[in-house]
Image (cartoon, rainbow, N blue to C red):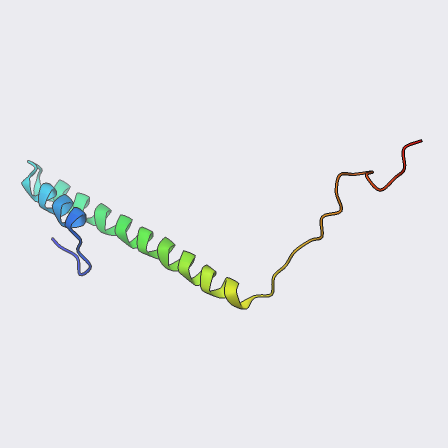
Length: 76
């Protein structure tokens, strides 16, 4: 019930799932849910890193700030 990239927090969660009194079916569902959650988290981290790496290559898109509306008009 361990994953390839197992850190101490993750391993302790899987160990705890093995210790809890559950039916084999419920235990399997819990392990599958944990594996799916890890996959989603890994995908989000990958996407964040990919967007950050693409951001360095993309041109900087910016807009010039012209100040508050009507600030260039003279008050009379």
